[in-house]
Image 1: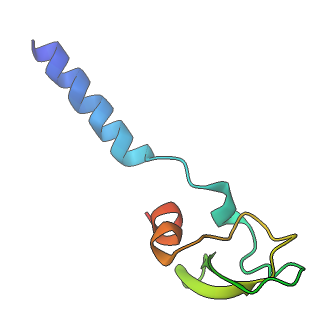
Image 2: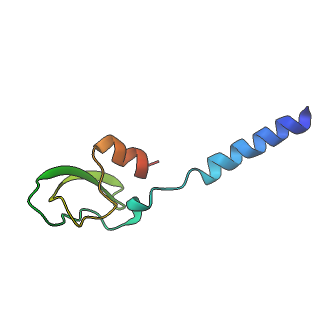
Length: 79
């Protein structure tokens, strides 16, 4: 019983220290406007100052650092 408790504690602490893997889009350069005729509001993550900011995406040739909402951007990149 003690062994199981210690094992659960170990894996719980391991999860806290390692955490989940970050969305790779968060590591890309922010705010690629792209090309096209669309005028879409998106959110992008800036590593410094560790913030999500809104930008206009034109619809094509963007990158993975583009999120539909501020909440999604923060959930994926700011944990």
